[in-house]
Length: 576
Image 1 (tube, one colour):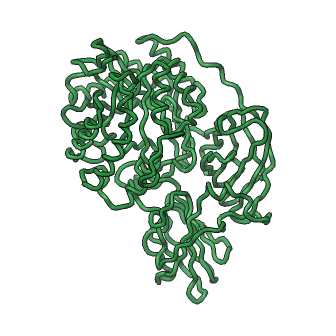
Image 2 (spheres, helix red, strand yellow):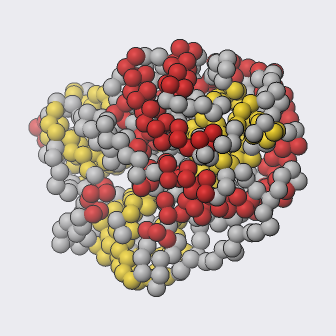
Image 3 (cartoon, helix red, strand yellow):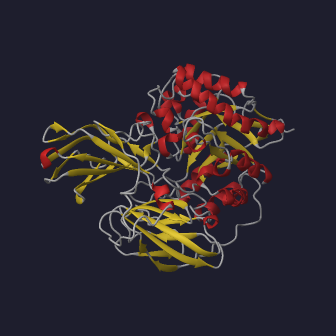
């Protein structure tokens, strides 16, 4: 069996110096039927290793419901990496950030009040159980047992969050006790405080950065005086948020920094090689004083775009790698345009009044109190004496549509820091609240969703609420709900179209306002005219020969009742 270890200056593979040239692919962001294609293209760019996070909340969305099949088949993904002749790096967290909802932590974990990312005994008990399940998959696939896994990471950029050494030691203990024998690493941004707080003696420190490679490697060397230098996250692009721009980075600058890394003898993991998509409701959010939910696309301006097609960065990085390591002669096949066509959308009636079980409490129930993992909760309350006035909500998480007796009044947005709205006289106040994405970074992890805190009308508390969870995937699966053709307010729409064969599709959402789209039951994700993203990517395995069915759940209003399909991605305006 092959050995992999840490030497005085290099990683050692069977005792010989080895430079890791890796790229990130998150299996949970890519359709499983497309894993092999993305892995193969990584090899064709010259990579010798694939890195992936493990998303705990994808594997165990509800406590005890562990799943490692289908989209969650980490073992199958690692086997495909191995079959392509590549090594693997596994980063199981438990916290992963990754612009993934709740930073990968399950809502059931973060809702119970335990001290996150700490040596809190209750937290450690859950984390240890999770890691043991992951290592049951990873351990037999280590390189010294004939598999691809050469490195396993402990936590993730922990120095930016805390400094609980007992916590890190506990993670190391459960990792080693589970049979992980390959070298263990940590990663932090290259600052003295983060590198010190985020690691332990015996763990190999690596850094995360996207520029000024030589300078940052020097900082890392001061804190990791022996062994290989490694940038475990070489940021070659960036992520997007609703209402912003599509972020791109200079291909030339990124290639130059990659060249400097490799010329210095450092190992590297390109973050991302292929970003993929935040399908369904899996996007995260940032909040550094202003809440910014992230878009559905995780294109990341990476060497492989969201749809798995090589970009200019692919070929620039390939040329750089060829200066330092062997690169295959073969190139990926040239990209073909996707089918382009338009189909009419037929109204299927209203959908936010779908039958569901309401929970009645004095105050509005949070998503967590409802054990609700979908996007929406509808809150209804009788107005005292039928009178309106100034409505005040302590905290809206994250976007609320307000109406009285079915008549729209306005919206309250967390991003705008809204708290008050004037409502007219009427009988019933109804507030539809959307969870737009859970914060994936820093100390807002695990915050509750819904109407949080007091709700008052003219200074007096409103009591006697009915809180109704709405599961958008279930609603879409059971259309049509009514025979109504009304398009006022939230409305459902369907379309059928034929394909000669399965194909990647790019659904144009520019003429829609805000909502969710499904193709043949596959949840493509969120759309929003707020931009920058204009297309939803439909991977070919979600399509089929013959008839296909599109479902659109619109929260506001379609500007045009059509579905247009474009030849490729349209991710919005850039800063350039």
